[in-house]
Length: 287
Ligand code: NAP
Image (tube, rainbow, N blue to C red; front, side, top):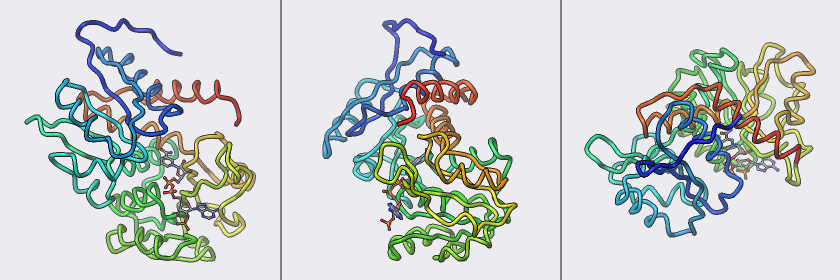
């Protein structure tokens, strides 16, 4: 359900920059947050060409925007345009959120990993502390998840990836507990994360499953970072075996919560954001 709100002379802007950005769900999520919190803001998607992110940062600085979300291809490029880069954005080499601190400095941050852990806890009631976690994939999302799982106290984070160099790079973010692993080691994992695009709608590998689910323990929980479709072939298989599982929506919503908090010092109601994005995905249909 969307609530229409008047745009006033005092309405402040927030935006996501990216290219392409037309299919971003962030406007749905953040406008639901502004509405639910009664904050006079509006969030738009701005198509910004590669190499042009400095213009957006300058606009945010000059025109008193709440802040920005950052998506591809700007996540790395934006680092050099911020006054301050948080330790996590620096480690990941990736900014997904820009906000202004109390002194007006432009801060580049990354909320993906904290969003993943918050989504795991709130949706599946799983605290990674002391657990063996396995992450399949070693791209940008996987790195954020590996780092956040280690930060949250995971005993070990196994990284399983096709390209061994990228697996090693992701493992290095595991705070000494990141280990390059092979699929046979999935049996060791309490938590298994799919951070590959295998199973994503509208792709060549929409019907693909990223690993053999027979390798998982019956008490393992599975998190597929994909949220479209809501139930990937992987999720259907693991649920048919009775395992508990979640898709990528909790991470998507919670990384947005972290951004909104940085911009407004207000925590939006998670269930309202979740409902708004679910409605938007339902309206898009299965592919
Ligand atoms: P990325 O940087 O392109 O990394 C993709 C990873 O998947 C790479 O490690 C790649 O392996 C692996 N991979 C790709 N195709 C493969 C194949 N055919 N077989 C085996 N491995 C394959 O992508 P990303 O940004 O990390 O995103 C990964 C997934 O997370 C996507 O599905 C994305 O939608 C999802 N995601 C979700 C959220 C959320 O909020 N829920 C946020 C970000 C991303 P190589 O290194 O060997 O090439």
